[in-house]
Amino acid sequence: MTQMTETRSTLRRAFALVLLYAAATLVGGVIFVALLRAALAFLGPGVMFYRGVGALIVDFFLLIVLVAAAAARLPRRFGIDGADALGAAIVATSLLLAAFVLGPITADRSISVFMLSQFDAADRPLTGAEARDAFVRVYVDDWAQIDRRLKEQALSGNLEQGPEGWRLTAQGRAFMKTARALSSIFGGDPRFVGRKN
Image (cartoon, rainbow, N blue to C red):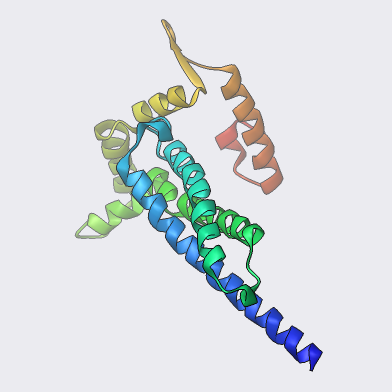
């Protein structure tokens, strides 16, 4: 009888934790989107990734408070406490970060997504040369994406502009060192990070 009671208690707690984590992720997602859409200056420079990280930090602390308040209202038989609220906030924030990087950041920065959008907008098949020409004409020239990247890297502290042009900062060199190491570990294309092989 005692073992059956313990099993029920464990299952009840596990179910309550799953619901708590799911609710934290849902509520955290709504808060995260609202913070990004509000475009608050204190979230970081005008680079989507950094604003997103700033919004997630704010979101994390709000989630701790909200989830702890919700957990305190649950009946004691569920066995949910403040540590579970912290865990739910950590899991929710981690999932939101992964979704943010894989979704909006990829769509905003990916050359592949741009290329696919050109095929989607075309009323006929495109040749490789037409896709390349569209990339240069639209992405590079019309949308000035190189200028955008230079400004973003300056805002990030990786580049600085001098009288003779742009140069890498000490932070930028450290970033490239890290990028080369990650590329080497995960087998990325060495050309993107200036590795020989």
